[in-house]
Amino acid sequence: MKKFFKEFQEFAVKGNVMDLAVAVVIGNAFGKIVTSLVNDIIMPLMGIVLGGLNFTKLEVTLEDITLKYGNFLQSIVDFVIIAFCIFVAVKMMNVVIKKKKAEEKKEGKANAKEVELLVEIRDLLKKK
Image 1 (tube, rainbow, N blue to C red):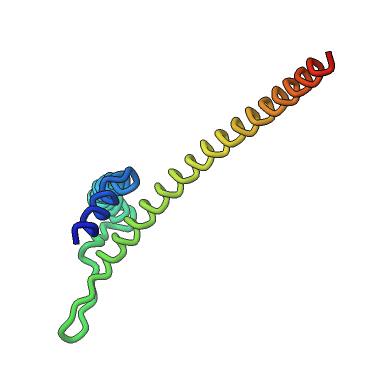
Image 2 (cartoon, rainbow, N blue to C red):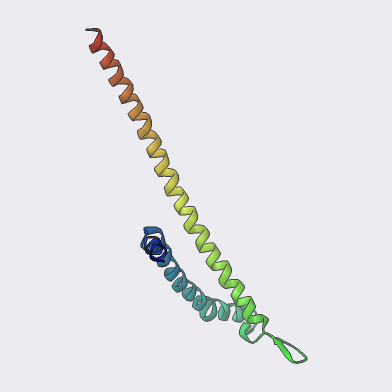
């Protein structure tokens, strides 16, 4: 049992787990910001454009149940905005990663040339 808890402790304090925890907290806060943006700014503006329509009040009642499809529409807008932001963030990260790999490749070629020159120098010194 002690071994299990020791392994768990090692896992929990690894950098990746802490990074993931921070990402979840930031993601949750970002989700709240987007929800507020959609609920308090975008949807009311869309309502004005669509003739005073209030999306939160869009619903259909079928016998004993009420389907609030207006809230569902707002959730879809939330999702689209969050998905777009994630797409942009991943795209920017990919650009940075490509740039870094290109620089590393360039350095690797430069290092290979240096090694080649050093080998030639060594061989010439051996001949003397």
